[in-house]
Length: 206
Image 1 (cartoon, rainbow, N blue to C red):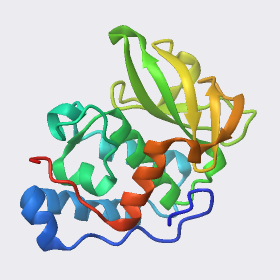
Image 2 (cartoon, rainbow, N blue to C red):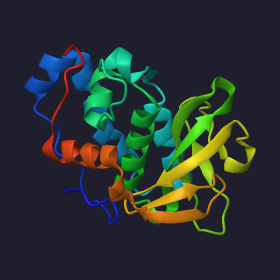
Image 3 (cartoon, rainbow, N blue to C red):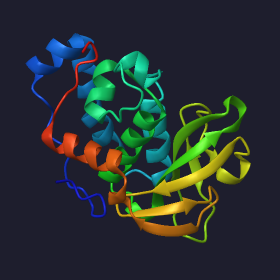
């Protein structure tokens, strides 16, 4: 199983082309193939360049509610499923960005997935934050406001909790927060990791 608390050495194996095309079509296969190309292009670049490259790559996809893609209220798609269908909700954007940055070697303790409330729409939302140290204010990678901005300037986000590969916090968007346990307490997170390991692909038409 993927252990996100450690440096990941390689991407999950790409699913078979025939299976991808049968579910998501040729366009889905082409999008999936672009993911390892992106990682290869960003290897060895500055973290700031990696953040922008990853943020821009995934923000090209469409922002669509789970019920309109997967016919369920809440589904955390793996990056293969997200890229395959070409659309997803905020969790799909955030999880794909997080995993890609981990693949590029960004340390887990510099990254967090933040579950927040997006105040203008009064809806729950997920973003990624990065900070090189606990003493440094983080920046936010988002699919609504597509600019990478300091968390201190995102007054439109109300933090609820955050997590990474190993820890779970009652959250402060600007960093810190009270640790309340291990991220394995989140069942959706566990399920997402297992499906990523298994290489399972959900058909959006079922």
